[in-house]
Each structure stands twice: as structure tokens, then as C-alpha cells.
View 1 (cartoon, rainbow, N blue to C red):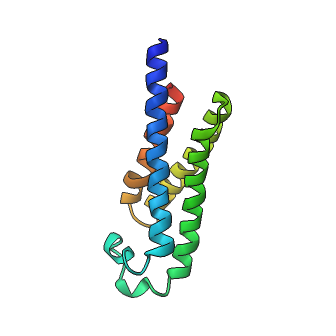
View 2: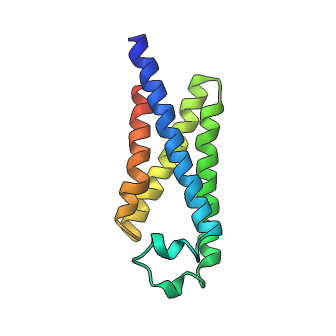
Length: 127
């Protein structure tokens, strides 16, 4: 039992780190590469929208950075209970944002953002 618990905790931490790194990438994309890399990533949007929406994307990127910071923070907290609670909160935020994005913008957002967070959340709850 202890071995399985430890393994699930390690899996949970790896998945949390993956979600955190993904949101760090989204921060970079939306804050610093919106007009250069953005059109290549978001091909469904007209290219003419990227320059006028640069400030909006940067604001959105900043919020993704906060999600990333919270997830990384959860990995650094020594108290297991507190660490789990912080991870659950930030993973929940990512899941809600991913579901909302899938419903309001692009269905693939669910698979790219919400699904990895759901897997991490499951690993945290099992671990």
C-alpha cells in the first residue's frame, strides 16, 4: 500500500509539473509571441486578428502564468495536506478554464488544457 501511494504521489507530481509547464508555455505564447507564433498555433483564427488582440492575449497569458505559478507552488509545499489542497485548487481552475474555452472558443482546448489537468487531479486524489 505504501509503495502504491508513493508511486501515485510521484505520478501526481509529474502530471502537475506537466500542466504547470504547459501553462508557462501558454504565458509565453500569449504574452510574447502572440503575433509571431500565435497565428501558427491558432490557425482557425484570421491572421488579421492577432495584432489588434495583442493586449488581450497578453492579459490572458498573465492569468495562465498565475495558474502555472500556483501549480509549481503546490510542488514546493512541504506539508502534504496543504500541498494537495493548493494543487486541487489550481488544477480545478485549469479544468474550469479548459472546459469554458472548449465551449466558448475551440473544442480542442478541452483536450490540450482540461484533460491533462483532469488526469493530474485524478492522480492527486488517488495518491
